[in-house]
Every structure is written in structure tokens, then in C-alpha cells.
Amino acid sequence: MRWFDSNFDYVQELKDAWERGRKKIRNTYLILAVILLIAGILVAVFPVGIFAVIQYMAAIAMIVVGIYHFISYSSMTYYFRDPMLLISGILNVLMGILLFVMPVELTVQVITFLLAFLLIFTGAEKISFALRLRYYRLPHTGTLIFSGVLCIILAVIFLFLPFVTALALNYILAAYLIITGIALLAEAIGMSTRSF
Image 1 (tube, rainbow, N blue to C red):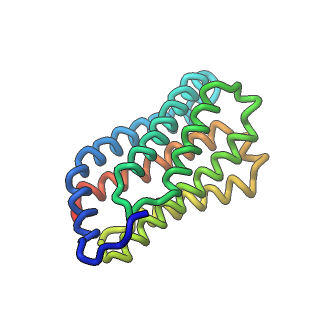
Image 2: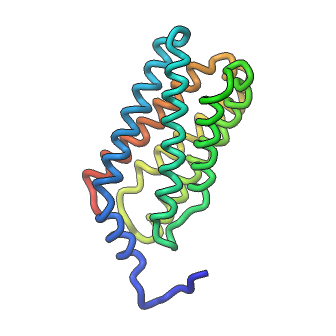
């Protein structure tokens, strides 16, 4: 455990780390957002014929997002680390593997609930991080809070309508991919226009 050092400027450390990695993070977010948006749109537009291909693309994208959560957690300064980021990463990787290896008939119900819990953890992590940034009086946390609330609302819909959502797995997957892509895109755009 690290002890708090009152002479060390933790906020400045976060700002310096942010500025060093901002361009790389922004570009990664933009690429992931585009991949997720394309995969989501294709799942919605071609639900039957192309579902297997899109399922593999979505699985790979979810695994990459999960791995990125692990990298983001490990590169974050100690006082700003959030264990929810690790849980979100584990759920993303787990869902990606489920989409990748199991037939749809077996995973429809499981994926619906996993997606709901993944969205809850992702939304809670985003809101928690935004509130932590706001506590240190860092500006521009609105896009994080917005994307966190959006994820939680979608999760509640998935939990209250599990059978309906299981029947419409293509559209659920499309909605998840598109909303996650929009959230990443909003965060990437927010990164390019602001600095701490």
C-alpha cells in the first residue's frame, strides 16, 4: 500500500501522464469506435446472412476493448485506479470469448445477462472516474458521465426484458456496439478539444 504524500502533487502527475498518452489514447478510441460502429450497423442491417462474420468481428472488438481496459488500469496513476475497470475488462473479454466460440443458440440468454452486467460495470466505472476527476476539480467530465448513464440505462432495459432481448440478440448486440462506439467517439472528441 502506498501512503499519501502531502508534498507530492498527484493531480499534476495525472495531468502529465494524460498529456503524454492523450494522442495515443485518442487514436485508439477513434479506431475502436469506428470498428464498433461498423460492426453494430452491420449487425442491425444484415441480421441473418452476415451474422456469423459480424459475430466474430464483434467478439474480437470486445476482447480488444477488454484488453485495453487492463492496459488502461495498469497505466493509471495509483490514486486514480478503479477496480471497476478491471471488472469491465474481464467481462468484455469473457463476452468476446463467448461470442467467438459458442453457437448462438446456447449463448443467447447468457449473453443478454452478461451484456447487462457488463454495461452496469462499464457505466459505474465511467461515472466513478468522472466523479473522481471532478473531486480534484478537473474540468470536462460531462461526456464520461453521459456515457456512463447511457450504459446503465441500456443495462436496466436488458435486465427487465431478458426474454425479449434474447429473441432480438442481433439488435441487442448492434445497440451495444453502436452505443459503446458513440461513447468512445464522444470521449475521443472530448480528448482532442481539452487538456487539463
